[in-house]
Image (cartoon, rainbow, N blue to C red; front, side, top):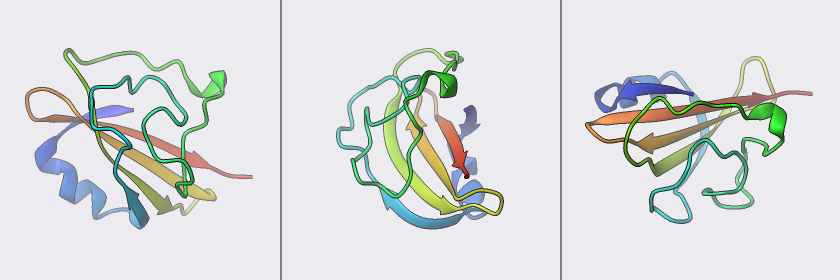
Amino acid sequence: MFEMDAADLAGFVSTLHVTSRQKPVSQVSCDPLVNGWNVWPRGADSFIPGNPQYGGFERTWTGEAVPLEMLSCASPTGDWLHVEFWKLEGGTLLAKVYTDWN
């Protein structure tokens, strides 16, 4: 998980091999520190598991975080890559990234 300037979003996404895009179920302020099906549609092509070992994120921003979009992507090293974007105050985004492999 990392913060990025919203102006860098298009350049970042252009480096990914996006296979599907999903909007959040609700666009209200939520907690991006919680993994699993807390915001995104069930049945999406990718997700971040809610298991405790995949948590431990720390809040680095102030104010609210509003979910914008999640991307399911092909991964060159794993089975898939999951990317979430959250809008923060001041033109900043939070990017949350997870890859899965067997």
